[in-house]
Length: 282
Length: 358
Image: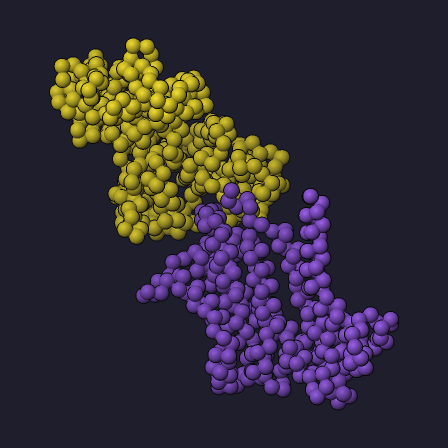
């Protein structure tokens, strides 16, 4: 009976793995096809079922003048905007979260929970609602189609995530830890940077991961707020679509765009299994 | 000299501290005894500067302490939870406050080594906090506060989260440490809910209840002369048994069939209504005594705590040894009236078996 359940468990895991990994393998296979291989029925295994070609990948490096689409530039743009916005969001969001977790604020009827909710509420509205004011504001400041403009908008999108995750995390860090630091001669800033923050790495890692994911995968705002000067990766990938859909280069570009997130996931996994807070409070 | 004057704190309509006044002299050991939520931790945090109070004054050596931020007060505090820095090993945990003080490397090395030795953690210097047991973690916290050599050491129920055996052992060590380290010019404030612990620590006892200090004085004094019924309850575990009584004709009439003979000396006790009190260990199960019904009997270590009832009158007895009693069993009980406390109807002490307080 026991072995039956174990078999069942592994079967479930295998199914799920196939479900998750399948599309990636399919995309990988498709990226090496040409027009005829894609349109002539279901074929998956290179050399056996179709003749692989690097054309789908090559298109991505070539300049437009030579018939390519050049995703290197939008890739770098995406990398810059996402990391900058994430870094600023984490830095500001962590400070805000610590303040919200440890100090009591009161502006009339507005208290800590209301402020925390205000941050999160930025993510409740459908992006479309935000897009028009963002567009008008950026155009007023001359920031449309610039890296600075995108970073600004992305901070608005990512900081709520950072605040939300970090408030929750700091609430679980025993207050007595900060108090002990104060008693031991730290001023409040030292208590935060030398004691609380070093023990908040798991929270920081999770918050950073979410910021990177949401920033990297955003299509809507980069689509609305940029035109030609600064294109981000998702926009460029969609732009690959012309009269005929180039499934091969779309697949290749999709794999490239997923790669950084895979890297993040692997790094994060190591951190999460290692650090924990036990020992601060038993 | 640490002086508190009428310190009061109210949070959201709830009284946390109410007119708390005290004087603590260097070289003194002060034990705050009170039930949970009596305001012990709040008082300690107020002294440390972690809690701001609404009104009252706090000064240390003549300096207004309320103007000094926590990190400059140079106090040490050990919490009932085992609070250490999880990202440091044992050595760095203890060294952290010393580094904040800007001491030299040699001095830090010397002091850390010494306090590690004092709490018996030699060989654990490089361990991570997470790898230590609860008792060891509390030893690290203790070592950190000792190494600082602060003028004021606050110990907030430091032993309460330890298991029984370890508590006993660490209590002894702690007492020795305090006696040896701080009897010169430090002030040690120790809070506890356990009367026995308070008695063992001795020093000056401050009995707290509902945010007030309801009695303070030498521990033995408070134990022998509880000012009120409430103090008598708090300073005894189980609580002192308190019975409303009528004093007539040389005996205390409690209820139908329950009369206690008066102790030899009843000078100052007026005839009429009063409250008699006796400790749970002044009750014996003995043939020929008053018959009581066992409501509950629990074995606590080498003693047995028995809840007894006769009609409306209930009491808690603590007897030596393991006594096997069943619920609703009827047992003969004798109360040693030599150790009877007599309170007035206003619940203040009239007569202590230890005589008058000179």
